[in-house]
Image 1 (cartoon, rainbow, N blue to C red):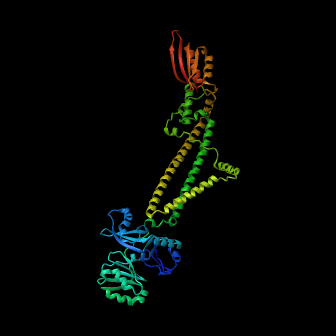
Image 2: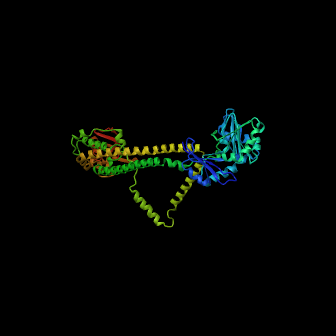
Length: 541
């Protein structure tokens, strides 16, 4: 619970205000002080501020509002009291208090001009009140007595649960003011009168002279009363002090931001290190194997194993040892295949280099001086200022809702950004570990890879049409062969009436020596014994 600074606004004829500081339990921390409002503002540091205004300017009424009207009660109150006040209702501000057991709601009415002047005077002195109410609202309530406060030339009066009122009581006019306040029940009224020692010494004879008008008159010191009606409601509700709230949380926010930045920095450093390691492993693997084994979704190790096994199945054409088949079991795990996918293209230009280029561009255009960035910064500052003004115009409850929603949105956004980043770093770490294992394995079979690359099929680089025609001439079936391109890289070949052994020799050379792939094939036996006709669809290596 916070300490309070209670400020009593000066009257129109006065020049000094009075204030008192109390602790969280209501005990005064110092004696009552008087002076200008600017001096009182010095005591408001880290304290809540309550301001008491002249009760003659505030009218308290009890009105009946529709039950369960909720937030609409503030809109209905002016219509409920419109017939009971003489002033223009549009020029008055209505503040709602508590509702009693009979359904009557306490309404405090004050002129907007007076309230605006008070708030302007407080703002000029550096005070931002949390509570602003009439002094009469602080009068204690007694079931057996009417309670009055004689404060200078004003008599503040309340009886039972009726609203408090303020009557002018200049010197010599106490009895008349008392008659106005009590009305027809003056003779039966038991009055408990509060006043200061100065007022009692100055007007004791006048007060004692009015004792005969009342059933009973007692003098008491001021005590605590019911909770007053805060006039700072609706459009006059105090704006949230972001600076004060930020002072309490800035250390924790700074630590949290520091930890977050440290974590992001370490992750960024890990990502940079893993990217460099990935590029270096790609380069080293590229020196050991051909590019045709590094593409696609299958792993490099799986592709090399298939190539070595295929070479061994063709009778050891490339001088591979039979023992290698034991070292090349098929591994078709989805995890290894997924980690061989290439990431998105990376820029080969470093960030400092890009900044230097941007700097040179700005230097080459000294007349413009990068005005686009300055204008963007100015627009961002203006937008933030408007957003801050809008937030400060909200009620404290609305501000808490906005802050809670903003904090929740920030956490969700932060988690949504961090989780993919963390997963990307984890995937890259596993990819680098797998690439290192592949590199170690490839280095262990480097001699076999060298023999495989030296005798690799399709090394001539000739087109498929030229290759098919050349092998046909070498095998003696060129006159019986016709070919036609399909447009998708494949080649349709028709061979008419050739020896079956020659056809197998031609097809074997294309597949085993040059790596041509057979998409489809059909062979028809002709009428002549030993001769066949065939149709092939071939694809390049």
